[in-house]
Length: 328
Image 1 (cartoon, helix red, strand yellow):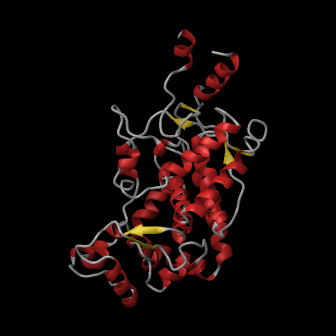
Image 2 (cartoon, rainbow, N blue to C red; image 1 turned 90 degrees about the horizontal axis):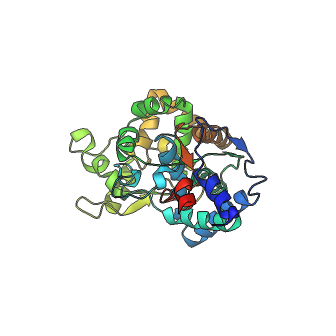
């Protein structure tokens, strides 16, 4: 093995110290093209499948809340580990992992063993918002990739579509995110789609009543009944707001009018604790954008403090540590 390959491998498997110091333009010297490459690949993905960028944006949420922003979400199952992709909030829901694969492949060609998958998730989430008309911002980078994943941790932490505003506020506060942060970050549902599976109880058996959610605006409920009939295909998807390809404040306007797709969305307006923020964001898009960026940056700062590496492939941990390869 050449000295260059040994150096790259050493860089890739170096353990992360607790609390990595994140900073803007982290790869300015080691991989100056990194952010350009991520945005280019995200733009290509959006042209190929418009829904994909919204899917990739959600990776930041589902990754960072579970033991910090460490790309544990991206790990495939192994004989010894059941990963987070099969957790209750992720299975049959998260998609477009291949977009991250394509980004990683492109970056590896430019800067081998340099840019973490965890940082790719953060950059790609930002680009998903910017490319669909939302705000753009400078991201802090310098994360390492986890060495393992945990389905149990994901199940214990991530909320279900049935969650109400109170439980969501409590969850976000565990991560030092305020009620305002939570409402603003829920605006990520400005783009993308959700499955009928997630709203069947709202349409036909809200709170075990055998009746629909009374907060649903009648004509919108009829529309959802046609999209998601009782006994129908629960993998059919519907738009999360009226402008699902544009990142704007339409999501909040829909909540005010009783047209929120998910129960966890609509309760943001029916709950006194969060209603004011919904109204504010529905009336002031720039305020929503400011609050959303602030929330995304705060969420991106979440770290586990566990050892990490720079994965060669975002789906698997690096196969052999440096000392094994040196001895082979």
